Amino acid sequence: MAEAPEHRIKRLQMRSMRRGIKEMDLILSAYAEARLPQMDDAGLTLYDQMLNENDHDLYLWVSGQAEAPAEYAALIADIRGQLAEARG
Image (cartoon, rainbow, N blue to C red; front, side, top):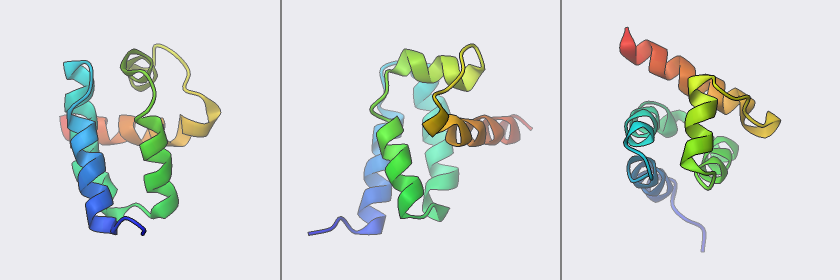
């Protein structure tokens, strides 16, 4: 049985706010709230896969200290963009 879209988004939002390091909790929970409801199935699948990555690697990618793998490059760029928007 397929997961209902609203349940999937809620599950991904919860995973976004319960990370290993506080910085990623804050960054990803804000991103999830702002962007996940508008994502299509492919986008949600990619985001779900990205959440399986190590928090320290994710932080390096989002902060620009390391290059994100090609499969996540556009998603990481969107996270950075949302973070910049939030900062005003």
